Picture 1 (cartoon, helix red, strand yellow):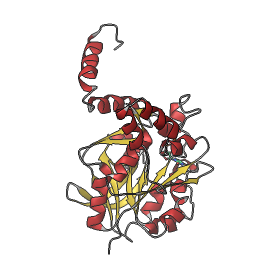
Picture 2 (cartoon, protein in one colour):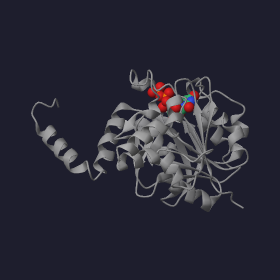
Picture 3 (tube, rainbow, N blue to C red):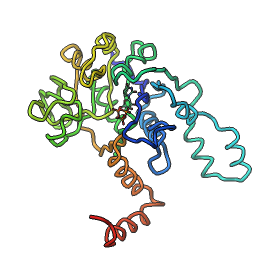
Picture 4 (tube, protein in one colour):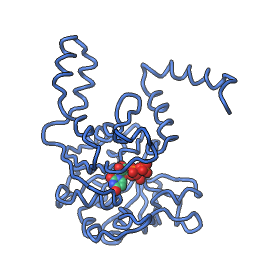
Length: 296
Ligand code: UTP
């Protein structure tokens, strides 16, 4: 019997060096896209997939993330007094039910694999999602819901995949693939950041995974891989052949918000999805780009 997917692990212990100095005193995951911090997009996406238990893998300087999902009594009282209904609703939307979020400290950012291993007690013997809040996916069906449905079909590990230009394979986890029905691809192998000339394909993993608890066994070896980090990809590769393992070509568009350009693109794309902002934003973009003062 396939166990239902109820748990999500969100690693947020990274240093966010690409966003310095913005991330000197605040966590990268608290940077907003339009008006919501990155982390809230992930939590909402997970909840839309039926996930109701969350484990944040945190480090120093990340306490604001936990505060963000708490009750803000004073602020609520003031907004109620001033009859600010829309603002109150926005505040309530960012609250999680009692007992649904736990945090675990990673202490030292030794890699994504190590971060996920830190959640071993939370995961116990259930399938679990891993979501990297830096990755935002704009889609009609939330990306994690698409993965959860694929997991319910296959009962195994499912990772969200997208095609990347061949010259960029050295930035991502890349799949070696078997059978491919255009949506689900059988995973034969996984390589972390291969050089383009040796990459087995140009299908890359994005920050959305459904994994099985069996992963904890290879992870527990804490073997160092690319960049001398404990890589999630290496531990996942050890499960291939032991459990069903697929890549899902999800419907939607991914924005890498851990990167400055991806983050800027996300502001525009998500802004254009807001009916109250879209017309003015579109108008601004058109006229601004037409101005001769904009450097080429
Ligand atoms: P990144 O590779 O984006 O690293 O991690 P980073 O430290 O966040 O950012 P840069 O590269 O220095 O700018 C991908 C995800 O894995 C988490 C990060 O928080 C991020 O969500 N992570 C990474 C951990 O939780 N622990 C680690 O040891 C490494």
